[in-house]
Image 1 (cartoon, rainbow, N blue to C red):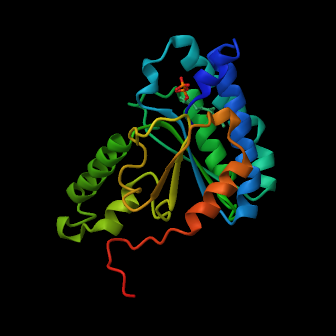
Image 2: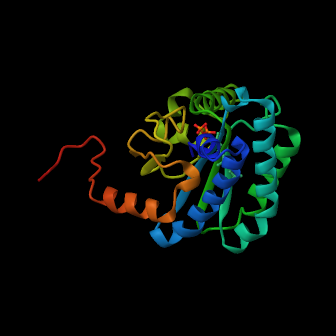
Length: 228
Ligand code: FPP
């Protein structure tokens, strides 16, 4: 969801206004996703590197997440949306106890929902996720719950924040930069990547539909050769 800051600055607004508008875009995209046949959406809302931003921007983003996760909860539930948060939520991590509590409550309250999956990456880094998964696996080996020889891709995936969710078919980065920036490093091995110049606050359901139509024409072979 890149480009919020530039979107705001261009309009003479505070960067946080860009993030507020960005949260509105999240809502718009969540609303149209089911009609486009999307089963899972994953939003990169706050990376483990974003803590380096000015304190007031970090606080503002945290407040936005706090408000979103509490005020939208009933609406998410009534729309059968299952919410999950990927990222370091451990007490050793940097997220405040209050926000971890809000996140866990939101995850629990939507646990029974089996419609659209909406994942938010918060205090998330792809490398960090892989390290946390490796640590948890090692811990299970140490406790005699697993054998090293059991480890394969499927078992390792189950230790990631995404668990056994399907890998993403498509990754869209708005804002013009063409980088992965530590997003779902393990999961996007075979994903289609789409980089668009539009800033996230201006990204619309129609933009999403247009990309999906364009990408439908692309055949993903997962490393296999074409048999035709
Ligand atoms: C990157 O744009 C965006 C972020 C670091 C935050 C994204 C967060 C939201 C859209 C809001 C959170 C969502 C909810 C549902 C409350 P940038 O600030 O790096 O933009 P720039 O590259 O133009 O400076």
